[in-house]
Length: 216
Ligand SMILES: O=c1nc[nH]c2c1ncn2[C@H]1C[C@H](O)[C@@H](COP(=O)(O)OP(=O)(O)OP(=O)(O)O)O1
Ligand SMILES: [Mg+2]
Image (cartoon, rainbow, N blue to C red; front, side, top):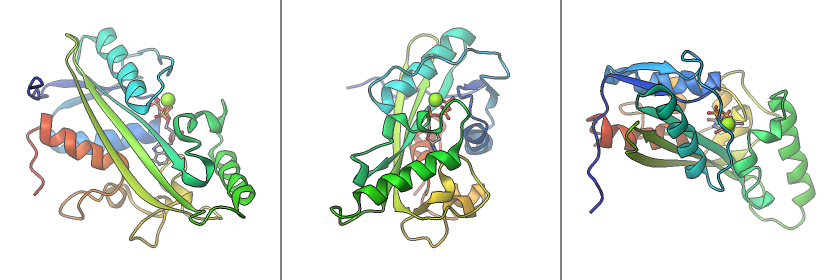
């Protein structure tokens, strides 16, 4: 049997350089009384994401931050996977926005791809977000979690909230995009819901394993 889950307490590094993601991860951790510091607060470098999977990239980021800080570190690697685009942008979701991090341009690129695919694909606008979370300790202990949310891509994008591709993504069962939801609605944690966003769903598994949470 695998080593049992390890309880997270005290200080933890949120190993991201994305402000939108950082805010979400701070919010998710807030109820658990851990002292969360960001990679930017500690001046940690941004490692190259050379992994071939979301889980590998999450590990690279978490292990890099744990080793550099001597603290447990929590990283997310995530992306938007579009069925009609053969799973793209997928692992390259951040890179589609370019060095300028122009997500309006990145969303337009997705939409153009859908227009090109139109004739052949029945479920043209289906997509999902995936989040791989890794919690890494300086002694090498690792915990991995994953969450997915399925939905539909809308055009034009709607809503000022969130970050990245949020204004284009309408989760199944909802009439608003993530860009039209508050942070709490996008998380959809109990008692509001059963977990909605990919990141919230992955985090719920982490919270049950490592933070003593119970979601029944
Ligand atoms: O909930 C989300 N709502 C909208 N867009 C999202 C979401 N979750 C991931 N995404 C997009 C943003 C980024 O372009 C890419 C993840 O790339 P990813 O490398 O994991 O993050 P990142 O480079 O922005 O920050 P960092 O690596 O420092 O954590 O997927
Ligand atoms: Mg990244």
